[in-house]
Image (cartoon, rainbow, N blue to C red; front, side):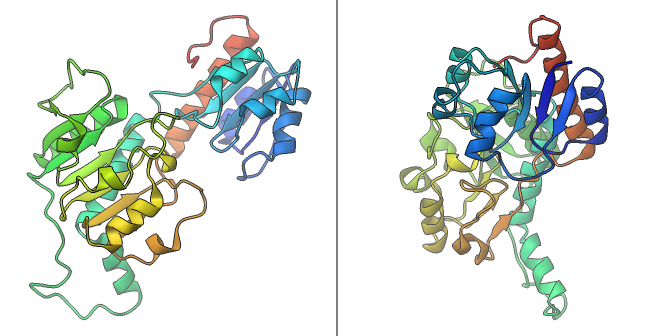
Length: 316
């Protein structure tokens, strides 16, 4: 029986299914693999079910010639922590879990948008601290959401799901920027240059993490937003230049931000933590049991297909 390393604890149903066909070693930790663990995973196992933060970069493959492992089955749709080109050059298949995360991630985007617009996080902190003095006509005034304009950067599966929620749920006007032309957005929406999309009332970033998107939201791009604009990031933390975002918020260049991801997770800039106009979530994008089970089962489907010599359904 081939040996499989699972680098994080997954739902029990996923672990049980994987164990029906693999000799499973579970690394029961939430920390990413260390440099030594990355290298030993390639030497000592036939397959690895890895996840966010397990940095399989070119140096890891260079240090592990002729690896025993033949597949990296990533738990998640984003795989920028894996250099897929280097992995394939070393003889490894790389897969991910697209589709399963779409609705959950879109829901998280709307959670951040609503919480930031209506100052929900700030209001809860005031109430829990015993500082709420009672209802008043001009107390805790936030930003109305219904009927506003949302600008979406990246109209893939998740971007389209967010657009539908915004348009059909809140009557929002949808504009978007995408690297390629989107022939059918699936709803009334206009594809515009980035400069115009950044002028929306709410800007939501939904691009994949990659070398091309690293710090694509920088000081220059943030300067395109209007002072009452609210910025939302549910993509990858390194898509945003965090110091530039901090500066834009501190200077009143934009009104607020909602973030579920950070460049150096789990580290969050203390300047962001100190701001009341920023909603911060601990990477909850897909944190629902049904979703995590579906992600795990898809990863196992890829492992089983590879084991059977069949094409992996979600090869990247």
